[in-house]
Image (tube, rainbow, N blue to C red):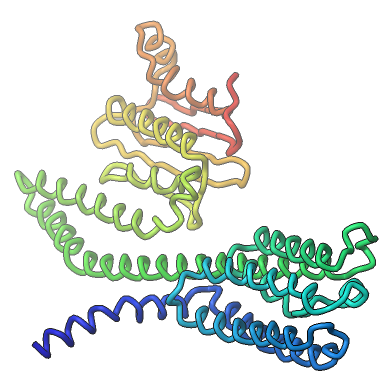
Amino acid sequence: MTDDHERRTRLHYRPTVRAAAERDTQPDAPLWRAAQAFRLVTLVYAVSYQFVSVQYYSHQRLSWFFVALMAVWSGVSAVLLSHGKIPRYQIVIADQLVVIALMASTRLVSDPDWYQHHQTLPTTLWVTNAVISAAVFGGPWLGMASGVLMATVSAVVRDQVNLDLWRDATAPVLVSVGLALGLATTTARRAQAQLERAVRLAAATEERERLAREVHDGVLQVLALVRRRGNEIGGPAAELADLAGEQEVALRMLISEQGAGVTADLGGAAIDLRLLLSTRASTTVSVSTPADPVTIERGRATELAAIVDTALSNVAQHAGAGARAYVLLEDLGDEVIVSVRDDGAGIAPGRLAEAEAEGRMGISKSILGRVRVLGGTAELDTEPGQGTEWEIRVPKGEDQHG
């Protein structure tokens, strides 16, 4: 019974410990600690102000009661914020209410001649704590809203609503504090999110590199050995060698794609064009791309990949047995150039017009049509026996339908 009870007790308290630890590692944790320290400093100032001003109050004992309440709340709120047993939004709301109540109590302890020309009972500096709490919790907008609220309450309590408020620095100070602390909190949270994202990407990259090393030292070497020995033996083994070679190339491109995957997708709107084109590599197709990512809008990248597929399909069907194709990607900043060249038989004069007349639209629609929609240009260089080369130039901007 004792062991079971202790086990249940430990399980019961573990979530609380975890919640406290998570709060300590939150990006705004230093700001909360600084706010608590500032609260204690302003409390010292408020108590000092009470010693100086109490002689002018009409109800001195009642004023000391409110000052004691202010001191108690300063300690209680600091403890609650540090322990994390109560949701912070509840503490922030309570902070606003307590501060407003203490400001309103100024009318209970002093005459109009005093509170109309002096600070409210808890002092403007201590009131700033409520604005800081709201700003650290909810950002600049909530911080400024709290500042406006506190400044309004101060003006109402002191009967200064109809006066020239620009002569009073209370409102500008409170609103400025809410804005500054809110922006600091937002910046800290954004920086923390970016740091966590960078750590995850670094860990993922390290894991990819480890797997790539293991694959390279194992599977790729076996495939390379099978391809080499199959070609040496010849006969039926040559077909096995070709299959092993294709799988070796595909696996290498997969590893390359995973390695560059960190920069492949930019928010779902852009993609690294190198990844799409690199997957077209095989034992008969060589793909060369820049070392740096070539980011382009996803739809345009897909169309460019389709153009390359059409050109490579023409090579496989018409260039002749044993023809090799070469794909080259260049990034010129505002446009990309994709070249597809082969060392095959080339295209005879008049053959393209003849193919279009026969209803074969591979070049006129799949290549030229797509390039036209993308607002680019396509140049074909071919001679019988000299192979074929396509040079596709496409801007990175919006589609231009012409």
